[in-house]
Amino acid sequence: MYLDFFGLTSPPFRLTPHPDFFFAGATRGDILHALEYALGQGDGLIKVVADVGAGKTMLCRVLLERMPVHMDSVLIANPALTADELLQTLADELEVSLEGGRPMARVRRLELALIERFAAGRQVVILVDEAHAMPDESLEAIRLLSNLDHGHSKLLQIVLFGQTELDVRLAQSHLRQLRERIVHSFSLPPLSPLDVGRYLECRLAAAGLSRTGVFHPAAVAALARGAEGLSRRINILADKSMLAAFVAGSPCVDVSHVHLALHDAGYARGEGFFHRYRAFIGAGIVFAVLGSLLLSYLH
Image 1 (cartoon, rainbow, N blue to C red):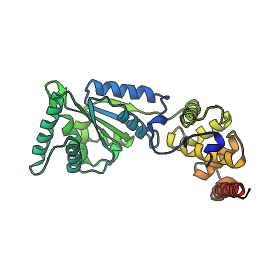
Image 2: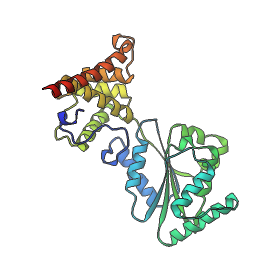
Image 3: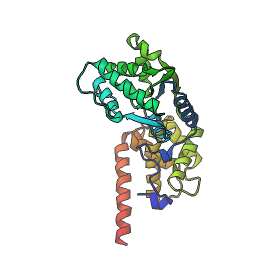
């Protein structure tokens, strides 16, 4: 609703990951480069963990988009796959038939297909999103796949993206063999208050904004406190704050707009008036927007 008002060409704070809106600050860019280097070296099994909403899925999608032409990527976006379903997904991508046979025979067929690709100069990379939610049997299948090699080279590179619960699971004794096969481990930190301001500017610029200073410094500070450094929360709060500014006819987002967003999103703390009546505040924002649109239509 506020795109034309602020001079934007696309929504700046959408929740679905879009590589064009990737923020390379707060070590994100460094970790991306490290992942690209590790995959290029054929280092095998890699792990990336972050708090929920910290941006690991965005990092996964950007890495997927930047794969070199000689790499064949397989994205596992559904962590609930059984071990058989995981193998079948990989087989489908490699165009290998796994009909019949025992589990180890099926793995052997995959191995032969991977050797053929390796001989042709192809490299296969598996990216597993939400790996913390995978069943134990599927994590065991990941371990078996990570063992596949040809000479001194791994036939598969595997990157596990998961919430911090992944580390907790891997610390269990029955997953020790998988844990010890992880060559590189990376962690995405929350955004600092300074990073939040840069993040907002990055997203707004990617959405077509030609000016800076849309968010007042005090508004950025309030938003950073409420979002606790998590990019998903930042997106939610920034979107609601800009909507509140649009309703108020303000070209700049100030602290009052962020406070409305905090209470509307349920991130506010305390027992004051706004906390008790945040549902009505949220409804007020919606009705104000509808009212402004109706007035524009009538005139």
